[in-house]
Amino acid sequence: MADQTSEKTITLQTSWKNHLLGYALSVLFIPLFGIGLVGLYLVYKRQKKYTYTFSDTKISSRDNKYQRNIDLVNIERVSVEQSWLQKKVSVGNITLNTTATSMRLRGVADPFALKKMLEKAISFQKERLQKKEQTKPEQPEGNPGSMERMDYLTGLWQQGLVSDEDFEKEKKHFE
Image (cartoon, rainbow, N blue to C red):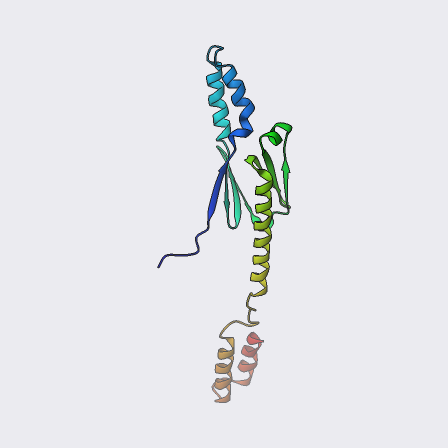
């Protein structure tokens, strides 16, 4: 039987619209000794630098060197920042703040819709965690099986196989 508990993931990259100005300038500089071709390559590499992976429980940000993970339940605030050009092409940067750190998702298409989805997912995960903590079974006070061992010790004492002193000394371990 297949395992049904696998997490769903979605992967996003920086939108090409976020680098629209870089692409436009590079195209304009192509006649100038081919400098624009180098510019196009550099802008393309910069666009593909960041990858964001969203799962049911966490968000991962990966660049050329590092990967950062933030659990959804730890996120306290989600905010969107846009420059005037980003507003025109409907892209923006989303900042996720926790008590310890923050993560910026750069150049995301339709940032306000993504912010809304993230806030829903965060609240769902927090509710799920609360329910899980409420339904957590209580731990027994003593070690499991200690009652059986105490009964065994009492039986030995009643049969006279254990002295009163030894019985009292061993009984302290079970209290």
